[in-house]
Length: 304
Ligand code: GH3
Ligand code: MG
Ligand code: MG
Image (cartoon, rainbow, N blue to C red):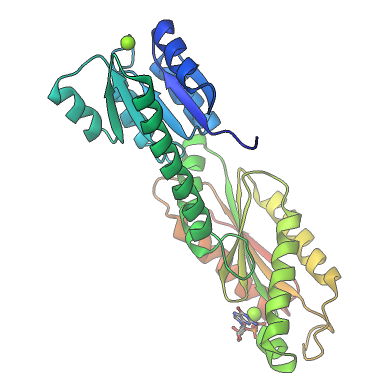
């Protein structure tokens, strides 16, 4: 049997947890939390495919847990089913209003519970598949512009909370129009794929993201990375692409494909916007081009 879908049970009553876990054991990897607070932590760390959530719990109640799950980017797409002894219409409505996909009253029938869990887990898998496809660039199979924009937004907010620097490398292939004209478009596409793969291989940390920003332009988002380290990574990428030795007979700067790179770093203060990072890296990229291409130019953004 391959991958098993994960279901998180959040309930303060061990008896309830045992009963639910027993019902799901055969088909899912079930794990549990006995408080809302712990449930939130586990949900963020483990990314379950579904959450079964009790409402009446000491400390944080189920409604609050649900609201919190829905407001966190890491957990907002996990379907939540309330399982509660509260059987009034208002209770059910309030649960659904908090963003739950379903509401099951206790005592529940095991086959019904299993059927509903199965429905929502299947929907979640389909959603995940579509979401991952919608984030990929068709040609190079790295992240696309849409994914980059949302990651920039997310990382900007996260770095602001944690007072960490955020760095960005913007990259552009040198004289790529001439490459397409001299060879052909198919050769151009192959070149883009190889360059994308090479850039990706230069990034080591889990939080780093490489995306195709535009035609022959790529971007690397580097959270918790200061300027010095970002410049090192940029130089490593420049060298790696240089060493691919993809022939470019019509390039005025080299006999093979080269990259120009612009690096910018900033601390995401509340009065700054993510666009300042993109604009600064772009301006440096332009500088690298003007200075002769096949090189890295960098800047620290100190004021807006
Ligand atoms: P520079 O060194 O100043 O960056 O010059 P350049 O020729 O690389 O820049 P320019 O913006 O003039 O041309 C970019 C070229 O990239 C034009 C376009 O044909 C090519 N291009 C963009 N997207 C693709 C693609 O998906 N496949 C291929 N084969 N070529 C592409
Ligand atoms: Mg309870
Ligand atoms: Mg170019």
